[in-house]
Amino acid sequence: MQWDKGASDTLEKLVSVVRDPFRSIIKSNSESHAEKYAEARRSPHVTSKEAVLGFLRARSHKLSSEGLLILEEHKLTEKDFLNYPVSGQPK
Image 1: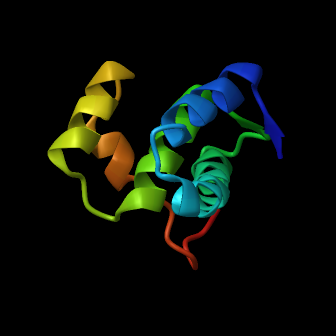
Image 2: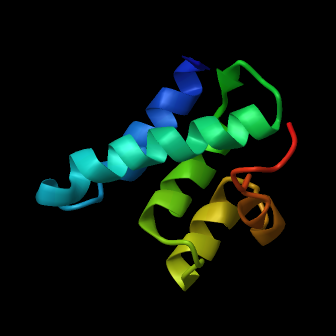
C-alpha cells in the first residue's frame, strides 16, 4: 500500500504528541488501521484522511473530546471514524 506524502506527514505530526514508550506502537497500529480504511475505499493509496482516522482508531475504538477536535481540525466527521471496515465484510 502506498502512502501519500501528506498522509505520512500528517501521521508523523499526530504521533509526535504520544509519549515515547508508546509512540512506535501507536504509529504501527495507526498505519495498519489507516490501510484498512483505504482498502475499504478500494484505494491503493493512503491519504491524510485515512492517516487521521487510523491514528484515532489506534488510540481508541471510541472517540474522546480530543478525538472529536482532531476530526474537526481535519474536516472529518464522527461518521467517517465509525465507518471502520470489520473483517468478514464483502469488499
